[in-house]
Image (tube, rainbow, N blue to C red; front, side, top):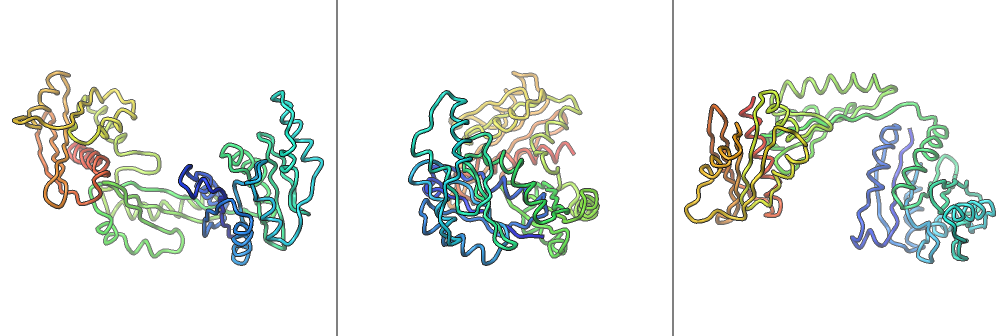
Length: 383
C-alpha cells in the first residue's frame, strides 16, 4: 500500500485569501482507496521552493499530488518546478496545445499566446487531458514513485481525480483494499472524560479510534482498513458496539446525523412544536434549527439583551403562549468576572428546568457552545 502526501500551491492560500478545500477532498478519497496520507503542505508560487519541497517529499513517500499553479500566467510555476525537481526541462506538447485551442473554441474564443505555457510539461511526463478546463494535468514517474500535478480549481481537480487520477493509482499500485471511517457524535461529556472511558480503544491498530472535540460536543472516529467494505464494516461494528456500551446515551448519532436533527426527530415523534428565545448569542440556535427544515420548529426570537426587569423564563413562556407551542428553549450569554455564563431555560408540557453553565473559552465561540448545550439539555429531557 503506497503512502501519499498532498502539496497545495498558491500564494493566495498562504495569505489567507482563499481556503484550501482540495487537500480535504483528496485526503478523503485517497483514504477510501486504502492510500495512507501522512502529510499535507502549502507552498507559495515560487519555483525554487516548490521544487525543494517536491524533492524533500519524494525522499519519504511514493505518491505526491500537487494542486494549483498550472494556469497560463508567469506566477503559475508548477510545471517548471516539477521539471526542476526531476532534473529535466519542460517541453512543448503540440497535442496539448490542440486541446487548449479546441477547448477555447467552445467558448467562441481564441487562446492568447501566454496560454501556450499550459502546453509545456516536464520532459517525459504523462499528459492528462483536462476535459473541463484549459490547464492540462500531468504525471511524472520515477521508479515506484510519482508526482501528479492537478489544477487548483476545485471542480477541475475533482473531475480529473475521479476520472483519471484515482483509476491510475488503482492500476499502478494494484490497490484492492480500502479504508473506511465511521464517526460517532457525543454530547454532554467532555473529551477528557470520554478518553477515560474508552482510552483502551484508542490504542488499537486496526481499526483505529481517535477523538475530536468541538464546541459542546465530541466526535469519536473509528477507521478500519480491510480488503472489502463488508470486512471494514465488521471491524468497525465490533468497536462501535463496545464504545456505545461504555458511553450509553452520551452518543447521540453517527456520520451525517446532527444534534439538532436528532432533537427535531424526537419532537416530531411526540408531535411537539418548539419555539426558542436567544439573548446575546447572535441567533446561532435559530440558524441551526432552521437548517433542519423540520415542521417541529415554529419560531426563534433573537434579542441583543434583556431589558431591566425582564426574566428569561417569563419571556419564554410568552413565546410559548403566542405560538401555542408545546416546548420552549431559551438561552442567554452574560459576562461574569473571568468568564461567561450561559443561562438555559427549558419548558415542556411536563416540566420546567433552568440551568447556568460556565464557559471559559473564546467569547466568539460561545454562541455555538451555548446552542449545543441547549440542544443537549432538550435531548436529555426528551430521553
